[in-house]
Length: 296
Image (cartoon, rainbow, N blue to C red; front, side, top):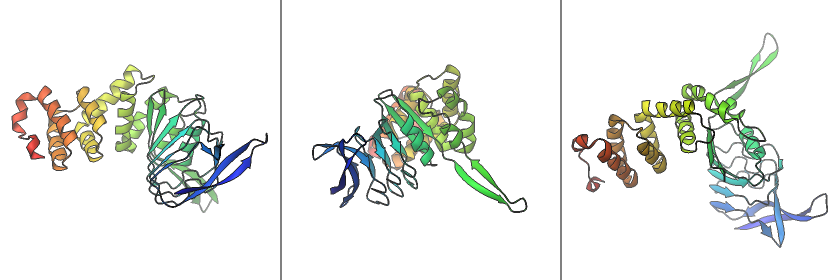
């Protein structure tokens, strides 16, 4: 794989590199900070659009410009890592990225501008991790539609889904976490999978998390323990399951179903976590679920 790039000059006459694409194929793209002893500051228009080989992308701190449609329609792109030094963000950077679910933002300037832009650019379910502050937030999806009233000759703009109000919690200077937590009832009725991750991420990374919100999230996870556990097993979320065990949020019935499911899928790490939880909390019930390491 080799990069395609151009030499550019900014308004001050300083020379830099703009990436315009690459030749060959690659699953994990790690863009270099320096090419030919010059800083790589820009990713040009449509540089990587339509690439089906891309699964993850890591951008250096030198990048300050993301051109229009940089990752447009990268159907297999799952994760992006970038820095908050991006000052010029053009429309469509991550539009139609159907598999994109994880974005890591590295902060040096305490700016949330690029996070706000990315959220506005993609209406699907997204999870952001903000480093080094240790903030992790999930955002549900939403649908924007235009409905025509033929008789009145008027177009009505319609937004459905909890993802839009969640996105409104993010400004260029930060995240209104109090408002974010107050929206939980909306995502519960709208998208249970997103609700699971919203609750887990806020509990595991409890920045500015008030006691009432903490209780609300924990109660939701415990009351829906079976659904939550089976979904996490399906996604092979070892650490999230470990957290549920540490906080005693898995009920006996949910544990039994989860053990069978994990063993059936031959997920040895998850099965071991659940068996240890069973030993610690439901020892008397353990014999009813006759499972040993040999079973999987």
